[in-house]
Image (tube, rainbow, N blue to C red; front, side, top):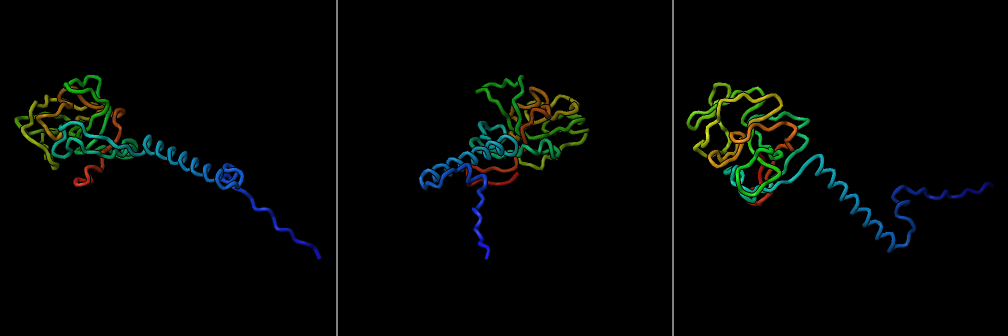
Length: 197
């Protein structure tokens, strides 16, 4: 009769990386591999998918309070539309100079879309000649007026919900789409105020 030899088990790429079956060495290498994979996954998520931001000022009150932490969806800029009422995070414009500590990123609400004609009278914002119905929480008075302006293609007019205490497009103009980091979609801190936008 012909004998049958049991084939040697094939080793996968993980086993080749981890090397010999010395228990302590293998365990150490496993942990190193797990940490590397976790760091790479975190880097990819932060760079391309989601990012958290801290709210340092009261310009978005009452919607966002000082100390809140929000999560921003970065894919929403390239793969979804930006709508009136969306809360966005964007790079601070070079001309932003409203006092206080300099910041690299700002968070505001989209009021005007490309092609919109904006103006204001007393506490009413007008978009294309019609009063804007702000379905979101905001504070009055409006504060500085919106000078009649037409939003250029590829840009957005933004304001803080705390109208009278917000340094926004009324001061430094519209935000180019290329400067938008993403759309905020959830508040994750404090625990008592966790919620979707």
